[in-house]
Length: 351
Image (cartoon, rainbow, N blue to C red; front, top):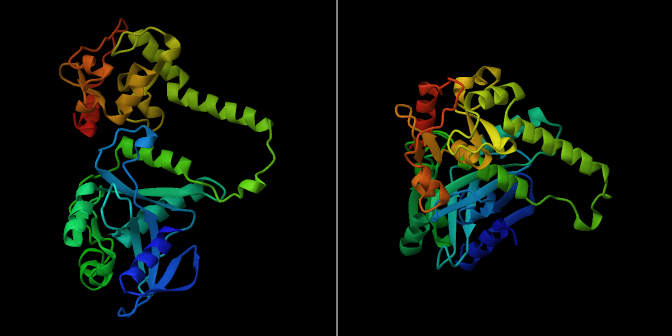
């Protein structure tokens, strides 16, 4: 069953007896509920865990829906649009719950992503927007019937038992989800690199609409195309050749560990790459590949005053903890990283 079908069945089980108008379509399922004047346009996804399968470090109590779309979300007043999560996982809640999100805010994010992807590619793109909240919201709704919290964007999230849907529609939706401006104070001003990577990995893992019994014929030539793409990605990851060469000359080794194995060393931008102007040697560190990833995630940084390594508590009890407080190995090139760039990186990493 789909998340919408599960929600409709749950509403029917508690006596609300909704009716689905026609077949579910690209623009949500249209549902009418006796006792509510307007029809409802429902988009819904399953509530899942913290995305640990991606390998990205996430809070253990994080819950989410992954609003995946190939077409824009349509927000209308009649039928009235709802963006919902369906939670019937016993490990999250002892009773099934519906989780409601601000439809205008979700649509704004999803539709903007689709527009960017469509502008950059041909067609048939899929985007996914993560709406994250904490387990405590589900716990409160399980105990009291309905609870209000916030997601990582600062928008209000309302979790409820199915029998309280009409209460949400008549009281809580007008208060919390009347429009994109109905969000609370911002919790995260912009997505972290971990959020962006987790969303990208989940988009890659989204099932396609292809019929498994009618897959295209395997084309060996695609292997070469794939190898070329990987080669380009490696080249980008290592940094433009001239930039990387300057850092090799300036540092001669990994700036954090002293590793001198050149194939393992990458050109890390301190302030993220924003065109050739950021390929300045003082905006770079030569880092071992794993440290480059952790640096980009904000789990490693550098104190701009002492040029010593900062390590996130997330990495405590790992091999990286030993880097904490160690000085950068500035090498023999007479070049030091920009203090302003390091300060910018540290501030964005919250270390």
